[in-house]
Amino acid sequence: MDGKKRWSQLSPGQRGAIIGTAAVQFTLAGFAWWDLSRRPAAAVRGPKLAWAIAIAVNFIGPLAYLRFGRKPLPEIDA
Image 1 (cartoon, helix red, strand yellow):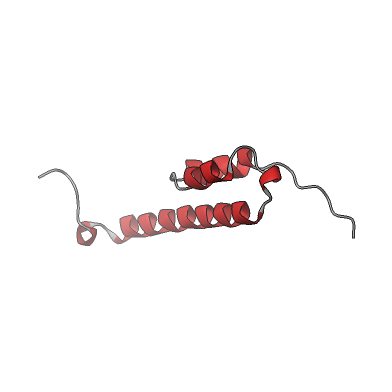
Image 2 (cartoon, helix red, strand yellow):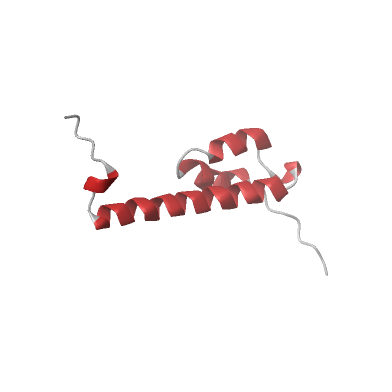
């Protein structure tokens, strides 16, 4: 056997941890892609396409974009 377990062989706690981790990952990526799609290219450090691809890389991509890929937006006077 190669040491891999089927979903049915995992404990409820293990299943919950996987589902929770996946939910956080998808939420981070979704927010990062949403932000990238609405942010002007001038407010992004580097090409938007490169950031769109990077965001797909587990937790590292979305966190890198949110920390390093965005430039501050100019404040709008109301």
